[in-house]
Image (cartoon, rainbow, N blue to C red; front, side, top):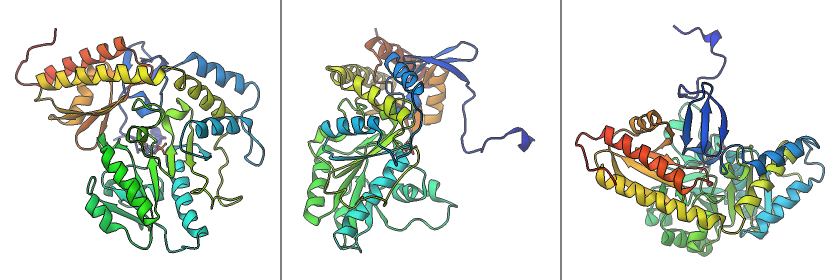
Length: 401
Ligand SMILES: Cc1ncc(COP(=O)(O)O)c(C=O)c1O
């Protein structure tokens, strides 16, 4: 039996038996020097890959000046990043956090406060969708509604009504006098890379306008260029009232943000919300540096181009190895392979090919390469995926040329 004293860490993670020491671009290197092609990118966090020189310089330069400053003082890096986010999105206001769950907490609080200051104190309920994932705080596990994350953590936080994914009639039926907002991921990430059709997002926007609800988008995983637009909702042409962002915005430095229109944020006045670390100078230096790169002319177009090559290559592999992969879905560099074999088997088979991916719900394997992945990187990944799919297929198939 394992001696509990020899295991200082919580047992909350089923960790792979891999120890990485350093990273470079799309590659991770183990402590024994073996390299892995990383198409998981810290689960959509390392948006610019590893050791990106612009990010490293920004962090080092800031580290020499000032690490932390309380939010009781002005923080110029926050003003700059906040203004740049405002200039490039629907939002008028930004609140910085350290993580996605905190960005969601701020989004939920913003929506409730909006109705509160409007004098509609009874409107606090938020409609969410089956299969959603919004984080692991008490409120965000209630919002996500997944029994596996709620079990054993006491009474579920009140105020979240879940409806089946894609069922607009159930959604309409769930809207009542206490409803404050609808919260949705434009593409369910952890739920299995399930995109919300563009027309459905537009229908949600319409329902919110009709019923005086706020539309909250969780773009923690889909945002910051992941789908080939700065934010995934841009594909549908709609705008949310509130949006949670994290992961890729910090390129590996813990950073999140809640964005809102001035109207939606009008209840978030001095003293009603706060954070010690959120938006600290180190995070702001890196966040601004990430944005420098993502906003460079042609960057997102290149992501779209390379991602299309990846998706076409994957579709071809799925056609040839249907016993392993039954469907390829998603957009940009947020792609799901729905597997016929257990997704854990596929993740392991890919790891054996030294390609890192990550599982998701609905028996899906997620591919989330750094946005800087090149066509050559993608072709390298496709070769490894093909090799794994072939090994996992009983019937041998014709290989690609
Ligand atoms: C869509 C979505 N929302 C929220 C979160 C929570 O973010 P964090 O783990 O930074 O709290 C995640 C994390 O995987 C996510 O994918």
